[in-house]
Length: 193
Image 1 (cartoon, one colour):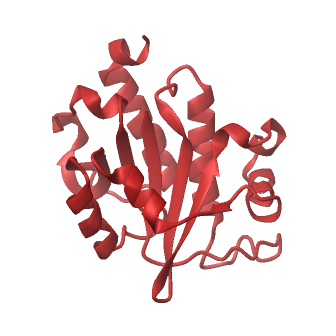
Image 2 (cartoon, one colour):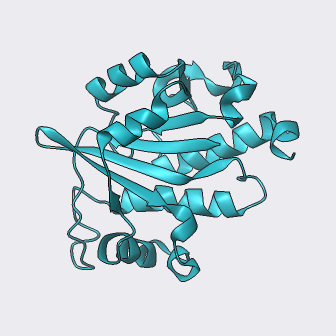
């Protein structure tokens, strides 16, 4: 199974209101849209190798805030659009506070696929077959993955692959959709079993 970790260098506002939604500079909707994309992929015919667990890690001043989302527990009605999903996450307990240790425990011994503009082009990346047994996809939601988080990841993972889907910046939701489709098309025989 592949677990998604979204790690950002800056915090997000969890004080959601429809008035502040389009203008906030610390927009959590970017994270919600990415997780929502993952839910749709997980429920499709191409996403059955994706884990039900998503970790959200972001820096708030000098420390990290860490959350877990179990996409299996999200009510179907909350997956119809990002507004309903945001309300579920923030107002109805969809975001479960957890520890950085739990996140690093999931990284320990795993192959980590770090999606970054500075990585090896995706079509030239040699992905081992074990990525479907225990792997992590690590990306920033709106900002870069914090350097100290990345350093600790390198120390704990069995391998870290820096992968790029292109030289342009893409939304995290588009990146995860493209990457999932790429994995599915490359390893279709393994995934379909």
